[in-house]
Image: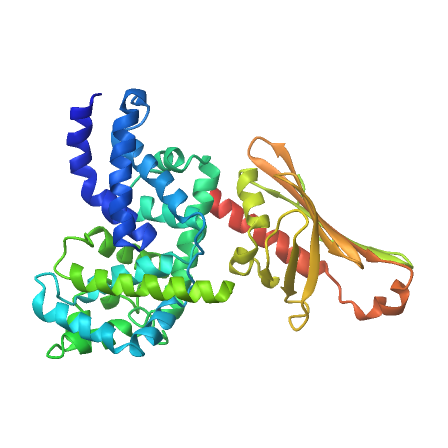
Amino acid sequence: MNTQHLNTEFESLRGPLKSFLLRITASVADAEDLVHDTYLKAADKIDTFRAESTLKTWIFTIASNLAKDNLRAKKRWVENVTDITKAAALGNPKFFQEALHLRATSPQGDFEIKEHIAFCFTCIAKSLPLEQQICLLLKEVYEFKVSEIVQIIDANEAMVKYYLHTGRSKMMQIFDQRCALINKEGICHQCSELNGIFNPQQNFQEEVVKIEMARVAEKADKEHLFDLRMQILQGIDPFESNAAALQLHHLEHNRQVMENYLQKKVD
Amino acid sequence: MSTSKAITVKTTFNRETSVSIDIHADVAIVWALLTNAADYPRWNSTVVSIEGAIALGETIRLKSTLDPKRTFKLQVKAFEAEKQLIWGDGQGNRVYTLAQSAPDTVTFSMVEKIGGLIFPLYANYIPSFDQAFDRFAADLKKEAENIND
């Protein structure tokens, strides 16, 4: 393995690596820095790569370790993150001015319900313990095997299974209680509320039935609905999609709100 | 094989309830379930909530379905990874023990002893723990084996 080979492989992985790091950190700047740092570390250590795993697994191991270092001192978010950030957005006229400007001018300024579902998952998954969040993303979104995740997070198989099961169960429980797309009693309607603001000409019900998770919600079990939610994330690159600009703006808003919220709790 | 129902032994000054059960799962999974405070309500039908960190010397605040209006402040008195966990207060201790009884089997035991010199004065006001102990052990077995599969 040499640097040239690494460069080729790294470029093919850059997209998923960057989106993985964004979903871990919820910060565009941190994700970009971590991709850069991952490359530098991989290039520096390429001589030590012994092909005991795939290069992809090895690179994600470096990235996960850097992300863990980055997040070690930061508090985890809370399950009702979307309530807290919604209240902050409603009290901040600048947020909607900026968002509507992006909607009107950016080539990536679309609002799409699927994109918002993926964005919502990113925010709520930050309430899980970090190991659970990392394992869940690696397995459910980036399709690593348990044996590969064992290498990436340097834990034994039993603990990886524990993190996966617990993280998945917790997220299913949260969405079942909150998400009005899958539960009529769900308390969160942000998809439809935001769609009404950004796509006022659209009929939300007509749009939502195009999403399998919402279409089958009444008949499908929670496990299947979660799998469908994960399929939505798999199909979205949060930096490249037509809705990227709007969702990244929204994510940055939420990150700032949550950091202030968590800091006030400490104070 | 150890899948007994909870047993309570009473004396004048104390009461001891115990249960044990064989769990076909990796001991690390059972230990993780026992020591992740925030996750208890998801899998354990006897726990309303546990706040705090289950770590040596830490104090946790536990609400049980036996008496949901009451919060028990308990100190973690022993924490030996994958072997033993003890928490308790001035009235008594709860001891969790894990033992590898076969390559794929962990024997989980839980014992709670409460008592003291004034125990006879309030003994009749403390509900039986037997049913809750049976449920705790069954819930732990079910969840650990589900994860292990």
